[in-house]
Each structure stands twice: as structure tokens, then as C-alpha cells.
Length: 116
Image 1 (cartoon, one colour):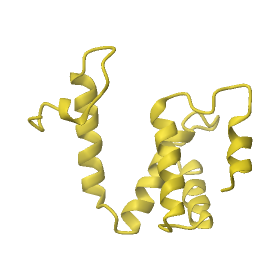
Image 2: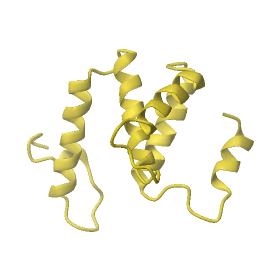
Image 3: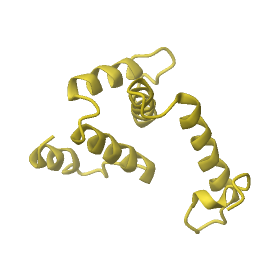
């Protein structure tokens, strides 16, 4: 994706991302593509499958949840990380978020099961 294409994505009146994790998932996707992990055609096909999957929101309100599932599937499919490892790390971040006081940064070390 070229810089003008990226600029076009973020030039609207609304913020491009409702939550920081959405921006991080977007950036990670771009970085993995730039490193050659997958082509844009592979990405588009995988994301399209998630957006059209049974249970996906008709109004697109879960677009970045679909984005994240697509990214997780590509990472697993390319052998970068096993699905169980991705799920374990996701759960660790969720526990860390629940253990982090309001207003403080969420750090993986805050996961009570990691002993950090």
C-alpha cells in the first residue's frame, strides 16, 4: 500500500480507528505484508471471508474484529504462531487489562498468571 493510499484511508472526517487496538492490528497487517508474509490478494480474500462469515454483523460494526480474526488465521496458516499460542496470548492480555488500574497502561506483565 502506497503512502497516498494510506493517506486516503485516514483523511476522512471521522477517526480511522475507534480503539487503539484497531490501529495496532492495522499496522501489524501492513508490516507483515511488507515483510512478505502474505500478498494483498491473500489478505483481501481472508478478510472478505471473515466479513461474510455467519454471525458477522450486517452493519459492519465488527469490522476490526473480523480484521483481527483474518490476521490471526493468516499468522496461523503461515506457521508464524499456532492458534493455541495466539489464544493464550490473547487471554493473557485480557487478564492484564482486567488487573490494570484505570488510567494506567495495560502491560502484559500485569497478567496475574504470568507472575510479572
